[in-house]
Length: 383
Figure (tube, rainbow, N blue to C red):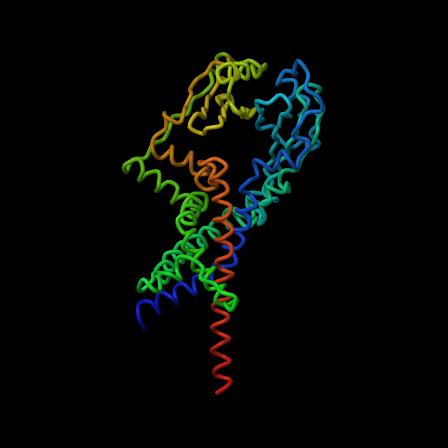
């Protein structure tokens, strides 16, 4: 068996083994590419009824959400406030159900309440587990399975896909200039049969999307395998492992009244031009925990995370992108690299088409194999 025939066998069988999962990952990746832009369009409860002069205090909005939540077993975990006057505030509630459940929606219950900050009206109570884009993301990440089961499956399929891309490039490589003419662009005529067109689509689109497909696949492995995630960070940090010390609240200043409004005012004053503010509330039984805030800007390089004392509202630590080590910087930008948003809207468009092509490659490859296999059977039968 020649080298190319061996590569063809590897390419074929790996493609058949992972094809269905790759198709699912590619299609869901396309659907999720523009979720940030589509959500406000399809969900009217993202907007208030009327913009007024004054908003209610954040602490009061949270109390309204607590009383309105229909599931008393859920505990409040945080909120998101967009720096736009016409947007509702999102309050998050969470309850752990069964960590070992087979399907992700049986592992936990998560509820979002969308509250009008002017009137205090709850616009929507949403079961997040079955919100369309959340379902698409979980299908993409774990096939809707428990992450202990789903992550290794999608991760292994992604590794196989990476090998398929490399073997595909070896098979694509033209022998001479004449062969190269048909490898770089479509040379179709009116008489060109669909089998040839399908073959060209598989080879040519696969070649042009290869770099983007590799980037999407390699960044996707970060969520699939914790060892890969830690290994990449370790490598980028020059073989060193870093662990940030935990900052804690001053329990000698204990008070039942939490200074949430004071913390939010401090965040707003320090970052008036931010895109949105995330506030993660400490658990009631954790006296040492802090209020974790995350300030999101249009440019991810300006994002800032700040911890506040839960009793005094004193800022304890603030971390910007420039303060992170190389491994942390990579991990912080991994999602943006994966979905293309690091290049803004054009990057998302590139990621969308790259994901679409990735989804098409197993299908066009299967049709090539099926056509050749049937051709051999027909030749044998005719003899």
